[in-house]
Amino acid sequence: MPVMTAEMLEAFNREQFPQIDHMGLKVDHVDDTSIRVSMSVQDMHLRPGGTVSGPTMMQLADAAMYLLLLAQIGPVALAVTTNLNINFLRKPEPGGMYAEGRLLKLGKTLAIGEFSLYSEGLEDPVAHVTTTYSIPPKRDGQTGV
Amino acid sequence: MPVMTAEMLEAFNREQFPQIDHMGLKVDHVDDTSIRVSMSVQDMHLRPGGTVSGPTMMQLADAAMYLLLLAQIGPVALAVTTNLNINFLRKPEPGGMYAEGRLLKLGKTLAIGEFSLYSEGLEDPVAHVTTTYSIPPKRDGQTGV
Amino acid sequence: MPVMTAEMLEAFNREQFPQIDHMGLKVDHVDDTSIRVSMSVQDMHLRPGGTVSGPTMMQLADAAMYLLLLAQIGPVALAVTTNLNINFLRKPEPGGMYAEGRLLKLGKTLAIGEFSLYSEGLEDPVAHVTTTYSIPPKRDGQTGV
Amino acid sequence: MPVMTAEMLEAFNREQFPQIDHMGLKVDHVDDTSIRVSMSVQDMHLRPGGTVSGPTMMQLADAAMYLLLLAQIGPVALAVTTNLNINFLRKPEPGGMYAEGRLLKLGKTLAIGEFSLYSEGLEDPVAHVTTTYSIPPKRDGQTGV
Image (cartoon, rainbow over all chains, first blue to last red):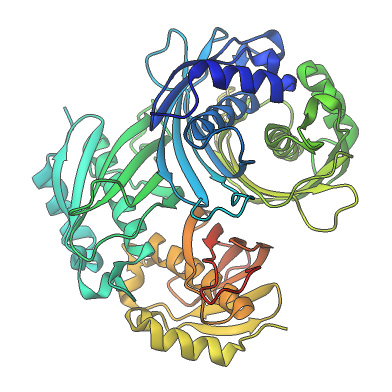
């Protein structure tokens, strides 16, 4: 069982990251190893031709991994992205998007996840992301983080 | 339906790539979008501590993607790897390994695939790979490359 | 000699991508193989602790590669990112940032570039990016795609 | 000043990794932040058309990063690759190859490096690699690794 629920994750995200309120992130599902996060696409996320921008997709995947990780280790630790690799597969539609992903590894110092990004109305994924977070050691003298 | 069967892929591989006979690659399964390829691990593939070397795992994933692509487009085209990204997740056991993967995209000029690598006897994957192949244009004047 | 100057690139960018006017991108230098692009960091680009967000850095690198590519092939072709890999190295300062990069390859269908991202006042790079763009075939019947 | 010289690195490599003696790795240069490692290409490293195989290039880059890291932290620590991203740029010649690279970051738990791979006789690089090593904590109670 994750230590943070979808509601807790959304509340934490709103409070800590007001700069990305424009994404309207919603945690549709979260469990011990996987998550689904959806966003509402605004004009500011679009590019010529009405397609969603690449950086918007990277941000969605990065946020989804962060929330998936926090769901497991709680809101205390200050985890940071160390690597993100994205392959763009197809042009997204201008409508909503969501990311579905899972933990490939949750280690003491590194967490690695894999995500597929979908555009509402398209069956095939529009992008695929693998990303690594560094998990800092606990600060209160506890071992084994 | 793929245009090459598992048997055709193995025969083509043996003939074209005698340098990797040492891997004993077997195509356990192949269909329109996915493949499973197993290898037999030899001493030459190991590193101190009895673990399978990283380059061996990269080679397994690269070969699996190549075979998955050939199964779709046939043995004629000279496809080449343009990008490979691998995350190492856990130490493999010294026994056999296999790669399971799928096409994320099969376009006219690029094919992108995703693979999980498994060590016999371990439930969780030991590595995860995404890789891109460039598909050369057809040579006989046909369009639609 | 590039076919577009720094001024042409900035004007093209402002016209085509009004959604990223907030970055205030400036082409400090461009030549046949390399570019330097700076941005002004706004509050919207920051995260808790005053650091520049990861997606902001990805966007800077992606834009720099796009401009470097356009400088070589001109504003006509509709090039799109197919892969981006970023390693985050250090926490940026909240001040300005710039990207310095170069073409590793400019082929007929693929262009690959490498970029280091710098935070004003820090000597070492804060992130490193490699990225691939797909260059679409020419549309007017010309060969040499 | 690195804590291991080119000679020490070559001796350590020969002793610990006899499985890659076939590469004939030589440390042409090493300093605090950069390294150059050359290999002699054998028939077993080639593919149809006389080109050096992709996995051989990945192995060269991986070994070069490992040696560059050991040169800084010494032969004790058991560092392991966690991520490797390679872009293939051009077909290598069948002759010798070398890797030139540098540390982008040498942290307490992660080291990140960037490498260009060259084929003897070609001016432009044939491949580009970024890779991350995980550095395990010291075991003797020392802090600050």
